[in-house]
Length: 149
Ligand code: CMP
Image (cartoon, rainbow, N blue to C red; front, top):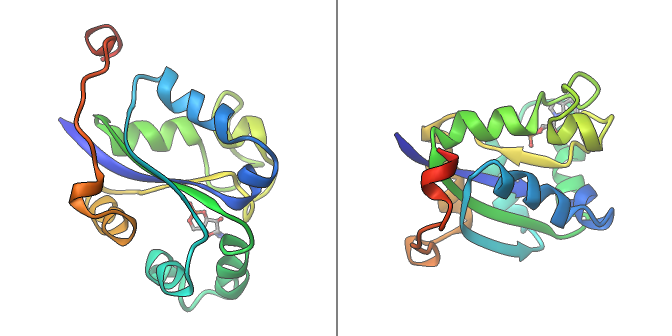
């Protein structure tokens, strides 16, 4: 099933100059970028994105971190994209993330863990709607589509 998911390249990646290398992993896997924008996240957007962590002790630090530098928000499309992207990025705590995953290769931190991706199709739809209008997303075919899925 072709799915869309929400991905965000976090402030630590941006200030470390990792945007291109992170995007390359997603493109190399055969995933299609159908929306992309660099933003400084608002307090309201951060509150919506991380509403589920509202009561957690790390919530304030999480919002502070996510607003500390720009992020790149992405809409990613592909076969089983939600689960595939989660496997490509690796475990939330980068210390536990397998080598070969984005977090496993680029971070040792749980809070500054390079990249975020939705954990379900329901959350993907919610998270995409915080950052993209339907008209922001584009349609095209990758020339290698039949070779990578
Ligand atoms: P993310 O995939 O963006 O989803 C929620 C984020 O909260 C998570 O990545 C981590 O960056 C952060 N997070 C989760 N648990 C903790 C924790 N125990 N301490 C600090 N940050 C955390």
